[in-house]
Image 1 (cartoon, each protein chain N blue to C red):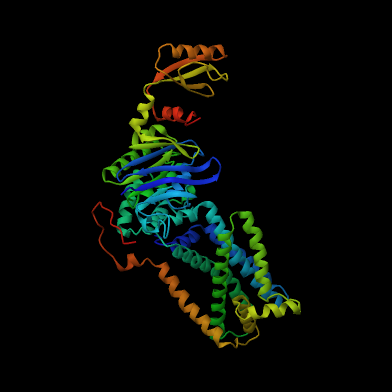
Image 2: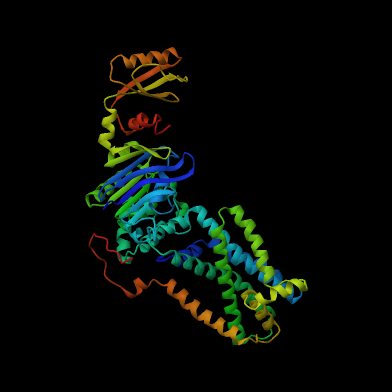
Length: 309
Length: 254
């Protein structure tokens, strides 16, 4: 049985917002990543998976529960989620917030105490656990949300933008936790914009653009699609708006301020040709780097837009 | 405090911040003081007290519900494996308990200053009717909050509906034509009955209706144990077991 099975999922707030005909599945023990820009529909997808929103059309099964009848209610105890909004009882301590959520999942008092201590220490929140959430920073709130989602060791973990605001140490801890979960046969669904982190963690990934999946597959498969091309990152010494080069063999051209990302066919003369174009259009090339392709490049190639500005 | 359910969570949240607690308790008391101490006819005093109850219980619960939804707290609760009925029940119960503390103090002060003699029957009837009115107003507030989306919407609609509740409760003088329409509702309206009960205590008599006394007693007999049940963590009280050393996370059946 798949942990998540979505077919032709549609939930549109207005044309171009929400998700539009998304099909994917998350197997047991798999870590599935969804990469997309802001407003591409990642959070809508997360909310659909958690039953917080109903799809306009299409079918969705989460841990074997469909959307009809009682919906996800019978399966909610097997799901843990940390959404992009950090919602807590502000006057209560982080420990109290996490304790309440864990008890709501049916965990016994003694076990909750032990598990919470373990997780809060891992998240570097142990020292602040008894302080009111009101005094927490944004990153601490995010970490507390993820601790709450992990506490009952769910069969399906849904994380929406887990990398935002949290420190590198916690990301390493989270990576280890997700890997251990996969080894134990538990599924994880992660949405975000951090291609590097998701690319290094997910077994499979989907690139979401304007509510539709532009590409999907294992991270290796996706990167292999781009690897025949040359990924050129150019930093301009003097910023100038460069028009799209009229060069045969150019796959993608994206400018963000002083940084220009180019994907070209692997022909030796193409890079100098594009550089000439930049110079002839008022750009002053500061540095040029030809590097290994990543999921970011796949996203650029498939959607024509950079993942991050 | 280790909150094991939403009722405990809401109660813990109230007492966690002294500032919030002081504001929540002192504000209704300050608003109610003029109706206790200023010189005015009994009808006006009672009308003021009832309007205060409507504003605190109905308007307060509807605004709080919309705020919870806007902050995402309801969404957070929805993904917990707890039936929605229990979540709403806990919200209703905790809201009512807070309101009892808020307006109960004003009502108690009112009776302390103005009641001629308080019999056990009169006290039980008044307490039961106050609880019934607060429960009903809280439930109506939650329902209205459920239907509204924005803060601005709930403030406008809440104010309007509060006016209607006060209007149909017969606690304000009404033209005779409208009064005859409102009268059939009054008999079942806990707010009107509460005003009548307080009036009876101020005038040194007990309310004549035995049915109201019995229903009030019954309500108190149900609500007090319900609050005790939700306030205690039965799992910790009953199943005291040594800490397990296993790393697997045992779950209770949902």
